[in-house]
Length: 356
Image 1 (cartoon, rainbow, N blue to C red):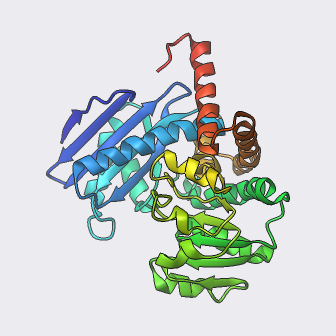
Image 2 (cartoon, rainbow, N blue to C red; image 1 turned 90 degrees about the vertical axis):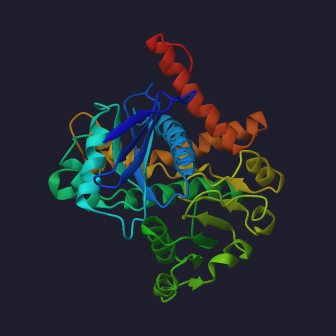
């Protein structure tokens, strides 16, 4: 196993691993540990180049720092990626090698579930390192974070509808959900139960068809989801979907979803503001999963009631972000960053450490 450190300005530690014996090609990025050890999910994706994987891990790990700061998890930001196809490249040997790679950081980074990764893979990793969360509930761990991410988005939606429409009720509005993975599916079901009208789209047409039998849900082609005349657009797939091509097509008054890195570029937040679209910064509204696993690594171990109580605070965090954006005349994305940076600066001041 070959491990090479990659120097990156503004990041505490970035390392890559190549293990010819198992086929593992992976990168771990630790952005900032001012608030505590870094925690963030492991993603498996068939990146075309190592540079593309590095770009993703840097962006995602920085996002985790800000997400944890705003959510008051007491943790820092990190992320890891494996270059590979999650449908055909998985093996116990590969993930045990990933566990050994994580273990070389001696607790600086703890991993969790993300795209392409499930509890089975995390349990393989756990055989080689203790720095992994989100294992089965039966083992005393916090389990699948997706229901908690969805719970947080549902809670955050109340702050969004309050900001955009003057009411925290969720029924009576039309939602367009992009992506019916674990989180998007939970949100679709929840909104259907509440009596909302929901349009869904997923790259898997069979999945879309399963949901269109539920009350108030209709399906469209994935390429048409941006054109749906709706109240709230709910992106729950991959990132970069708010860009020069898609923003002019949007027919919504608000955007609030679970996908990470929804804005292709920072300037796209200003484009949304100019169009009068209320944008819930992704790392604020989708923090339910990281809040859930943060309880597991905290003192006393995992307690679901504590996790749920903390997830309820996503509503308050979004209200604070919207208030900052209004008072300072800035985008909600900048307002969220300001809030996170303020909390990081306060923590550095308490520790007497310099600003990064």
